[in-house]
Amino acid sequence: MQFRLKVDSKGRIYLPREVREEIGDFVILEKSEEGFILKPGEVTNFLEEFKRSITSEPPRTGKPENWPPSKMKAIWRPPS
Image 1 (cartoon, one colour):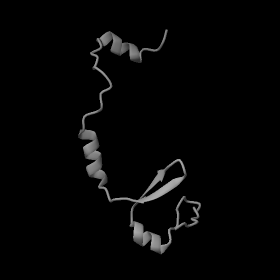
Image 2 (cartoon, rainbow, N blue to C red):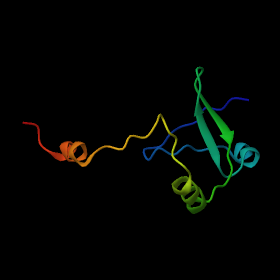
Image 3 (spheres, helix red, strand yellow):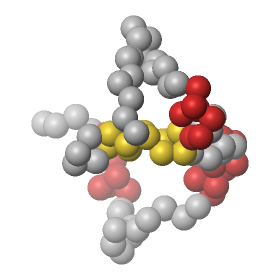
Image 4 (tube, one colour):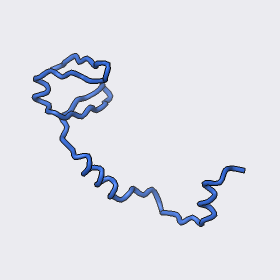
């Protein structure tokens, strides 16, 4: 099944009723090599996602360094 969809001046896409009924109220627009794919999405609670994000451990890319104060202050000093 293929549909031609028009994007309005505010960036909204009108989906035909039969597509909305099948795909649901939330969708994911995914870019692929062939174009864009519209997938059914799931409802997420923004605050829960935000809390999970800020309380999770950041990914480490190596061993943390403990810089001396002089090196830290050099970051804020204007170049000579």
